Length: 197
Image (cartoon, rainbow, N blue to C red; front, side, top):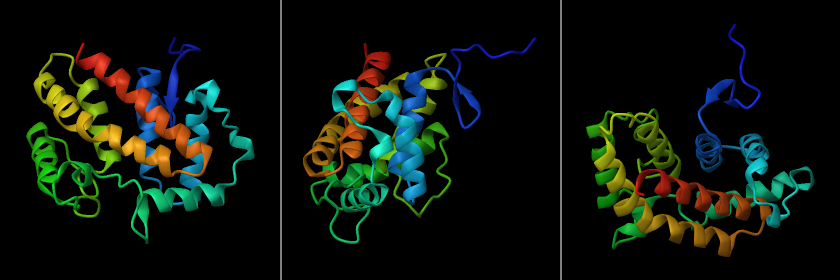
């Protein structure tokens, strides 16, 4: 018999191992959303993980306002208020495609991680970095990539992710995007406890 447990979590029909993994996949999708439908889908799925104190009711969301806020924060056309690229926070020039982007690209290559949309979005985009963490944690059963994962968490993500989240919280006008930022903080905290402790 091949019945799934009632506690099995699914992501687009595929079972995932934990709510932490599912949350990471949803955050990855959220930060890479291309339109209102993708934003709506990812935020609606993530709303199950928003902390109760945030009082975010997805049924009452104005999706046009969320899309405007998302674009203002992460996409443009004006100067973005919370750039989703590590190089903006880690490199002295605060430009895209800086030294830290190259470091991330080299790490991905060394680990055999291939970016599907290479040369369309810089490798240090938050969505790619979340997915790299998910892949490394999932495939780290023999500790083959433990040192690389520890470096990526403590010497890369930990240096820029808190600033990124702070910019989101300080500049977002919609409660759902602020809730997503808090969810990212919680997800990263669990990542650190899974790997570094």
